[in-house]
Length: 262
Figure 1 (cartoon, helix red, strand yellow):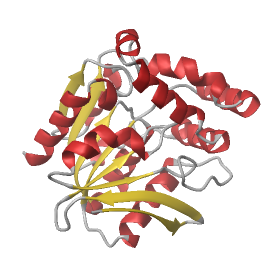
Figure 2 (cartoon, one colour):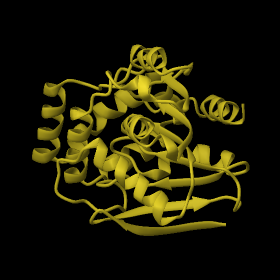
Figure 3 (cartoon, helix red, strand yellow):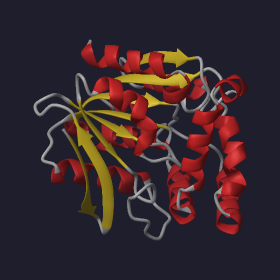
Figure 4 (cartoon, one colour):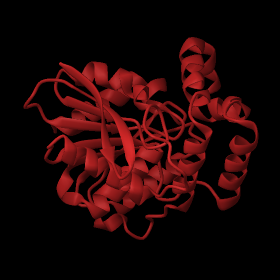
């Protein structure tokens, strides 16, 4: 059974979908900057056989409300906790990529009782520089999402994958281009301002860190830092750039499934 709906949280309507057997352990997915919850289609299709899958559009993305920014990772994490409350869900497994991974870190630090296991993918305790985010925000506010789309695809996927799977890349590029520029800019600010480098030791959940060997946005060094500072964390590096769940999807899904069932 699949339910797609909205909940009101903190003045925003958050769009979500939940599917899978009642009573199965819940696995929640959190999307990257510039995507919506459909980025997790490859994982949902396979893992819903074992888990109850919860996906949602981060505030400012997909069909969720776009409110005036800037946003904060704390605010986005609180949105997720509100979603769990509205759905009357106990502790869940959480898997987030890039911005979604930052939300996962915040949850692991500030709401540990709401998590079972944590998967942090293609992310970092601190991502990018003040200047890089300022120029990105200015570009989308001045010229719209299409002005950055080609450059983003070059960071999200390797040249080999772009040549091998042009239809998939085109689909993801459309998803990025259809993202509301105000919501995107507001979430850029949230990522820009988040820095958990001094707090990672507070994460007590069993954690898997996934990186992409060819990821220029959050390179393996970012993930290695997370794995070194989160107690007992496991580390996996995939043959992919930034959206490793799509580029190396089968191995990504296998790593997540093995970790959650161990």
